[in-house]
Image (tube, rainbow, N blue to C red; front, side, top):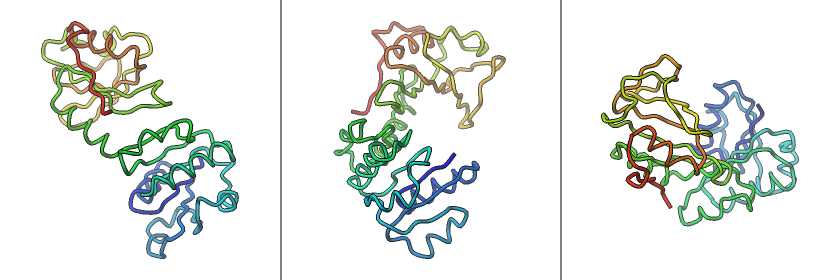
Length: 230
């Protein structure tokens, strides 16, 4: 996969390293990148130019990119590049960093953003996830809210404690993608047993969230909170 990362600060470089480690092709764009920065990610290609300029994005071959990641600390830059990537170059997927939570409302399809990543929102969600056994925590939204990543910490009273993953009677459009147990991630298989206080991670649709939480906890849907960070 070819990924263009705009912004070579600590966030952009960290993303680039992870992508390269996973054997993706990465181009970093940064107008002010110093030699020390470029040397810190030598496996990446580099373009030292203003990403808000059409000519820069043409030189970067944006039309051939599978994903554009806008990781600068400037929300205006991230929005402009996301919009150009979508409207001028037809990039299939854009991911944009939100630095100021007050600007988050703009990071949507109208500005060419497929996935908006807000550090304050994620940190708040993770804090709430740690204290919300039995509730459903919405960790992330995809495709402008059409799909979500949610977490349910299984209470000891759940009807599924001690049963296998294969025994889960999940609602349609809900997929179990991970289990966190004693701070360690587990890739679930049908034969894995489910334990009390397991953190179950799902991809789901918003319409299925309450039914999912009710199924897992045995609680009435009216008694379940969906924690959102608005």
